[in-house]
Length: 546
Image (cartoon, rainbow, N blue to C red; front, side, top):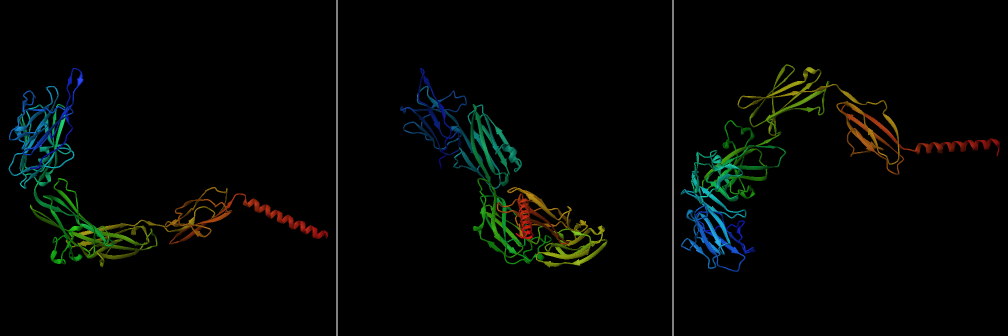
């Protein structure tokens, strides 16, 4: 058997003799051990004296210690520092004491956890966090578990992490769960539990304000179960993540396969009609990414970024283990749009105005619907036959809007099972208005100080809402968006011209700002005055004949 070696925080006893300190002593080893496994308890002290003595008491009061004598089941090392129990049972439950003298001793209480039915097995597992084991339960899901302890006054219980009691958890997934307590045993009996009940539990013993814990993973065997959701992929997509999840223990092998199908044959009326599909292709298993099982029966397997090459079809997930095999299939739909039905305005693309010719498209998936439509508008019911566009039946409808009563338009699509699906458009009809400037002036002169920033607001409105574009000195300012911008002139600029153009399908309007740096106008006026005075002086000189 594999030995279970687990280190714990040591239990230390220090004695004092005539006021002077003596070496400390401690026992290391498991506090909770698995039945029939080897257990080693080590006693260490800072003293050079190796005359260590071991004592044992099965009485929880610690009053009945007796020297521990080597036997066929208990061995002592030559120096007395190690006590080895070759196959621990409930006979070894109790308190162990190691002493280097009559006054310097360390104590350790040993508990034993056991599976008491014949079909289940309990094995130790490596754990850096402390004592841990795995209980393997057969597929019928019935098992019994016991924790043996000395008759001490302690709180002993098993929890499903984080804080659900043992039987409260199993009563959700099993037919029965019983708890029995006696002076030296806490036991549980579970009948007909399912794989979903598997998980991680904690055995806790609280005695004299000291807490001992044992992590117990209970895994219940069973044939794997698998589940997949339907996939909906847009026709513009090139890849998809395939996902299969379920329960299974031992860990099942997972295989994905794909069967391309005729979309006109893919409906829910007849289930997965393989006879209307092409040959299946097994997706290479090495492409799959498995979830970390980590002592649980639940699993998730993903094939990431699988290429979509053959259109819609059936994706199958098959799981198998020594306990059995199961599989499930699901539809892979490739759609023009994510909704089953789409009724929308194709043009105009902005808003609907009085006087507009409105073009609409009513579309429905080809999978579960026929190509028959009925469009209702202004009291008229127009039957139409749709044309196939990729993975949808499509019918176009055109109407001229003249009054507000024409704002409600309905489209009816027929399902293969005889039911109908209705979509209704409520058009918001508005009066047209060409782009226009709200303020009085379409040209504004502005003087700013050198280096200052100034806000320009484009007050062009209209219906439809105009698209605003900004220019500086006829250069398109592509980084400027919206109705308001902040401008400033470069240090070497004495002026600039800004424009905003608001355009819609009804026309456009332009607003202009002439920006001049403060002081430039006065300087130009002074230069003009000097030139006028100079010309006047020359004229006077010429008249005087000088």
